[in-house]
Length: 83
Image: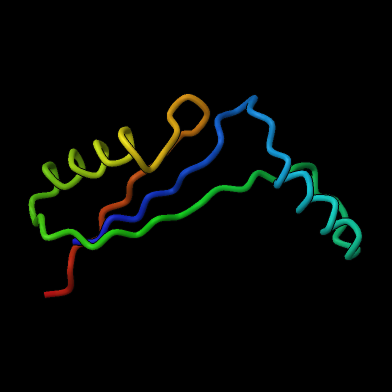
C-alpha cells in the first residue's frame, strides 16, 4: 500500500514562499491570481495491507515527525497496491 500525504500551512499562517510564487507568476504575466499557498507531498510505501492500520500508522508518523501540527495540516490518501 502507498500513502500520499499532503501537508499545507494552516489558514492564517504566513506563507512567504507562496507570496514569492504569486509575485513571480505576476511578473510572468499570469494575471488574476488572488493567492498562492505552497505545501509538500510525501509518498511512503507501506508493508501494511489493512487500511485502518495503515491510516493510523501514517497519522502517527505525521503527528510525530512529518508535519508540524502547530502550523500545518495534513491529509492522507491511501493507494492500494496493484494486485
